[in-house]
Image (cartoon, rainbow, N blue to C red; front, top):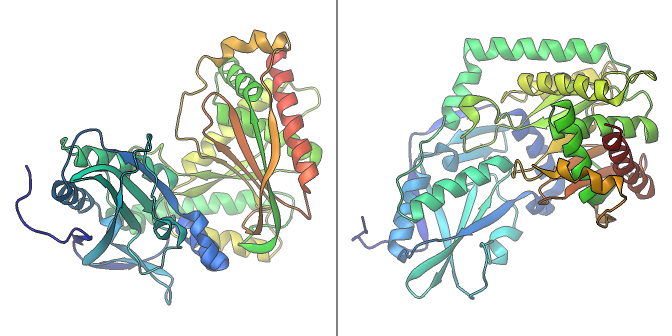
Length: 440
C-alpha cells in the first residue's frame, strides 16, 4: 500500500531490543584482525553490489518498503565494541540513504557514490549503506554496500532477494534464524557441548600431524595474487565430478593438494576450508555471517593408487570438515593459535575457499570432453592481478564465479611461493586436470 506520511528521504530507522554483549564468531574474529591490520585499506573487504528495480516505484514507497524489510532482521542493528572485542545489538539505528540520478546505463546497479563503497566501515557504524538511483520520482536502482564483519558473501545474495521483493511490492520472503537467536543457541548447553566436541577433534587431529607453522594471523609481508581463467579446467573438473559422482570443489581440492605437494611442500597434510555453513538447514537463509573453517585432514597419495580413489577420499574428508565447521565463538581460533604457539600444530596457513554463488553453471560441460581429446581449447589466461602487503594465509586459493570458465585466484606469500612458481603451479593444475579427465 502506498505511503501517505512525510518522511526524511535521506534516512531510514531501525528499531528493536538492545542485547549483548556477545562473543565474536570465528569469521568475525578473523575479519576483525584483518580490518585492524589493514586500517583504511580494509575498504577492499566491503561487499558491494545492487539491483535494478523491475517495476515502477516512487521514492516514498521505496524508502518505506526498504525500511520495513530491514527492520525484519536484527543483523542491521549489529555493532561492535572495540574495547572489549564483542558484538551487541542497538535498540535504535539510523541508516543514511544516498541518492543518485539514473544515468541510463543498462545493467544491474553497483553503488555509484565513491564515498559509499570506498570508505571502510567503522565498528560503530550500521553494517549496511544504501544508495537509491532515481529517474524523476521513480526509483530505478538500489546500490548496497555491506560490512564483511557482519555478513558473509552468501548473505549478499539473500539480502538482494529480500530487498528486491520488498521494493517491487511482493509478499516478503520468510525470514530464517536471527543473529541473536543463533548466538544464544551456540551459547546454550547443547551448543557448547557440540562446540567442545569439535574443538577436541581438531586438537587431537592437529597434534597428530607433522609440526609446522600453525595458524597465521593477519601478517605484513609481500603477497601476490595470481589468476587463472580456463574453460579447459572447467570441462575437465566437471567431467571428473560427474564420472566419480563427487563435487567439483572436491575435485579441485584434491588436484590442488597434488600440486601443492609437487611444488611447495611434499609433506602437506591439512588444509583449512572456508565454510559458510549454508548447508545446515537453519542457516540456509540466514542473513548474516556464518563463516567458520573446516579442517580437512588430507590423505596420503599412494604411488600405486589412482587419482579417482584420492578424489573420493578427499570428498569424504571435505564433507566431514564442512559438517564440523559451525558458527561458533572465536574460542576455536584461540585454541588453534595456542597449538601453534606450542609448536604442536601443522601448518594451517593454507586455505581453500569456494566463493561461487552460481551453482550449476558448469552443468553439461562434461559433454565437451571430446573437444579436449581433439586438442580444441579456448585460450587460457594466466596473470598476476594484484599485490598485497597483508594476509592471513601463506596460500589461499579462491574459486570464483566465471560463467562456463574456471576462475581461480591464488594468494601466495612471495617468500615461500614467488609469483613465477604460483603461475607454474596453476598451469600444471590445468594440465593435470585435463590429463585425469581424458584418462576416465
